[in-house]
Image 1 (cartoon, rainbow, N blue to C red):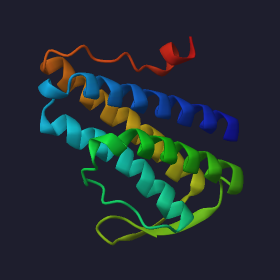
Image 2: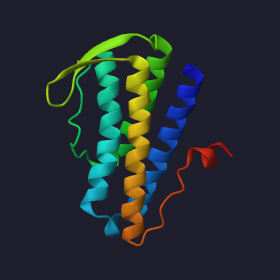
Image 3: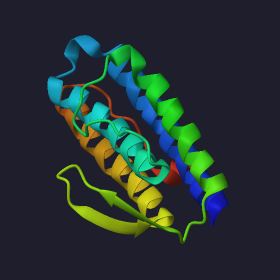
Image 4: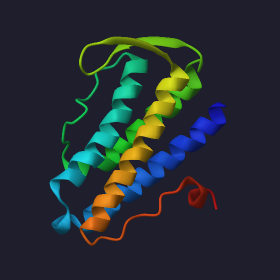
Length: 146
């Protein structure tokens, strides 16, 4: 199972990087909502990693300097892979969400949430790119694996 999650994190990192590149190449035609969503996508993975690792999380909607997004994406990937190597996927972790409510989930559930959440928001970004006349990325997992 850990190998499959590692593959999904590689897919996530790859298409986050590609999305950052498309946004960068078209920055003059990019609306604020796209910038907000790419930041949120990266921030959320950082937040889930931080919950597992007991580190300080980003704010979920903070806007980071654009030039730091690739670095954040790469660090997120490294930390997620580190979690896969160092934690039992069935281990339960107690954490507080961004509103302060306490929850408990397994490491697997938390990591899968980070992957699934990224996919969801890349789809939103693609829709906005298309609406703004920018060619969206083909980010389907199956095409990544071909």
